[in-house]
Length: 348
Image (cartoon, rainbow, N blue to C red; front, side, top):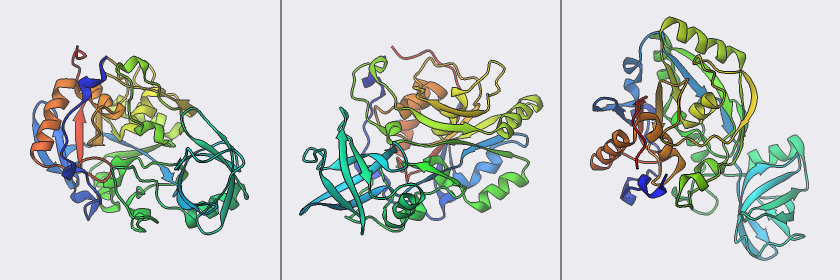
């Protein structure tokens, strides 16, 4: 499938640089047989008692650092742990780094460059390991925001709160499951009082999920693998929801990819730890998720392809055109949409 089918014009002023306050005051475009402009705070009345909301409980590590190689300034974002002492990182300027180079990150976090890979990443071996290294990352790092969110050198301390979902529990992500950023304790309480069940999965989000698609045909793109886990309690909750005729509502594309990676033919899911590199494009057969709460995504991105697969290509083109015309805020800190699953033939 041609990647240019998923391109669209987006004015730069619609790219959100900060979230709205409170979080549930973000706008919500309901995409079904018709389009409806609402707010995230309306979510309880848009779902039905007996529905199941599934969230990703991963927690983002602040893995972005500014430091030095000798007298030269560098920026490094840790993107994937290799073991308790070593991390793959994206560095700028990365071309000047060589194996054996010494870098200092943060206040006192030292590492040695061990290797470089074909994707331009560098492998950093730190002077500390395990929980001591994680403690230093938590204390000294900034949130690894996407490049379209502009911050001064050193980052903005507000992002340590703003870029973390309220129910984040299990450390391991280097990017936020951004649909969850809209939720507040008060909104979650209202969902519960309405009789809407809640369950969790874990998918530790890597930057590969948001990597640009550089090929011309979707068949040539390769997703990075991500690690996760589905508790048995969540598998059982999905089975109960199916039995009572409720709908499974995924909060975010990471939850959708998690559930559909472990889907069974009866609409249930296999529990347990797993790894996935699932790439969803139009024509994909969904077996678990009935509705999807998600943000507005980048042109030509795997996430825009996913929502087109889930809700219908032509329906999503109309929805995004409406969102641009009505000046919805896009991307990680932007507004949201609630999508019904809708089958359409793939675009040609």
